[in-house]
Structures are given as structure tokens and as C-alpha cells.
Length: 270
Image 1 (cartoon, rainbow, N blue to C red):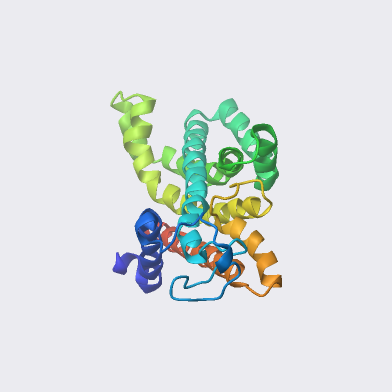
Image 2 (cartoon, rainbow, N blue to C red):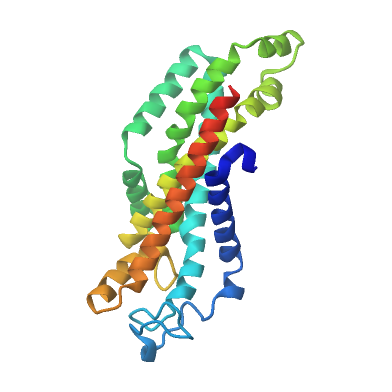
């Protein structure tokens, strides 16, 4: 792994791995109940029982950061998984069928690509109501063309290579050729594009939560903590907003660096 990703890439993997462990083990690692108000600890500074202090309701900031990682990261992750599956299916179908099918799918992707992801999410939330379900559904549609356009270009290139023609001559079906030969060769670029898109999805989900349309209180979420923390910062306790904002920035940078490394690796292999 070190030789392939390099020191910086390895560091990002370790950072994201550590974050995943903390997220999964939050109930065991969190020092306090993240949703338990304690008015005696409202806007309190750092202490032994509350290393990062308390928010406006006295809830432990560190515990809320640990639990908030779940919604902050799982929402974007589900978004990218759904958009990657949909984008890959559309891309491979367009590249394999060609002609009118390719033209229709390409125009559809162009239309989706022209609409900002936030708009899709806001429309979906307006229909389904505030919450992570609407946000994930809307952003998954918005991110589909980001994956599909790149995968389609790679699939068109692979479609014309001799190994595809050889498999076709052997009498294998289109589904068998795509699933057993084409997709495995597209996997590196699919993974690299999905990881790169994940960083943007984290920002979008956090922004929607900041607007109050994503995760709803009292559930902990980094975007929501930034919003609530701004009011606390005016009253002399900036730790909630600062810590949540720094974590969002740190994770986005780490994910983008990893996506860049994977993209370069995929290009070197070719």
C-alpha cells in the first residue's frame, strides 16, 4: 500500500481509517451521552469531564463530534454508492449500445450535470420533508453524471479493445462480457472517481444540514454543529463551531488527496 499510494496517500488512509474506527465505536468511546442536556455545563470551557467543553445546552461537544461523524459521513457515503451504481450502469449501457441509446443517455447526463446538486437536494427535501433520506436521494441523482461521464469515456475506449472482440467471437453475451471483462477493467477509474466525488458530497451534506434541512435536532451532525456553534461563538464558546468545521475540512482534504492519488495510480497503470 505504501509503495502504491506514497507516504501522503498512506497517511490519508490511516486518518480515514482512524475516523472510521472512532465513528463505529462512538458509543464505547464517547465520554458522555451526546444528547443529554446539562444546563450547569452550558457554554462551559474545557475540563476533565468535557475535554472540548459544552454547547449551548450543556451537551458534551466531544461526544457529539464522535456521534456526529456517523450522519456526516454515512450520508455522503450512501450518496456516492447510489450515484456510482446508477452512473456505472448508464455509462456501460451507453458505451456498449452506442447509437441512439448512447445519444439519449448522454443528453440526459448533460441535463443532470447542468443542475447544481444542492438544487436537487432542496427539491427532494421539499417533497419528502427535512431529513437525510431526501438529501441522499437528491444528491445521488445530482452526482450520477459526475461518475457516468468519466466511466462512459473509459468504457468506450475499452469497448474497442481486442479482448472484447475476442469474447464476443466466443459467443458470450453482452451481460457476461460487461460483468466479467469490461467492469473489472473499469474498476480502478470507478473507484478513483467515486472517492473524489465523496469529498464534494461531504461538503454538500454538511451545507444542507447547516441550513437546517438535513439531520434534525437533537441528532448530532457536524454541519448542524457549525450552525449551532456560531451562536455559541458569539457568547464566548467557539469550540463547537471550530472543531466541527475543522473536522469537515480535514476529512474533505484527506478524501480529495486519496482520490487524487488513486486517479494518478490509475493513469500510471494505463
